[in-house]
Length: 181
Image 1 (cartoon, one colour):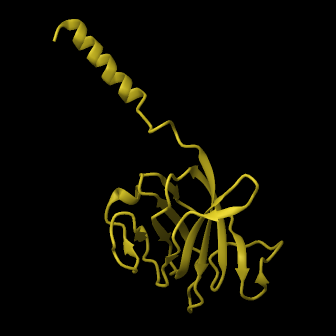
Image 2 (image 1 turned 90 degrees about the horizontal axis):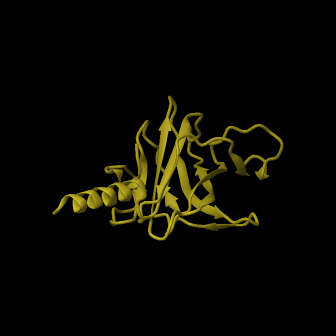
Image 3 (image 1 turned 180 degrees about the vertical axis):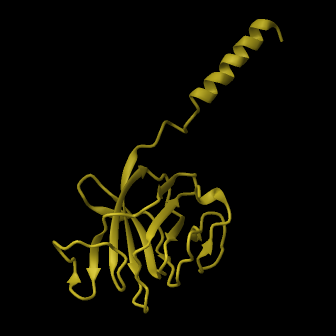
């Protein structure tokens, strides 16, 4: 290869690193609602920091390290939608909703992991992910992930149905296929 061919090859490689291909361009951002039920088991609620990560089989990942500002969807003491009261989330027997933004998933969310950091325990019942349309309506974009056991401290713990049939019990994340730590 002559000198001009080497220069052209170097420029082409540099261009590909600076402007990588993205399968038809970057995906737009979407708004997601994450609904989480805390079971009614004794000591099921928590005041710990809880994070979630979920994504699709194309490698799109949504990561929320600290779920904040919950909207109470169901309160067993007061019925549906408690209004006007400060609420921290993850109370026993409650269903909470959290909003987040991120890359639009190109497929169904097939993995979801939770991470709890703190001194008390927490026992979620189920988690599901919904996508919010511009008109405010929502539609499901994930499986219903059933936990119903206490989440261990400071590890990503959940389900990955993307490439395997691991069964119905949640597990610790064993690879980075479900996103970063």
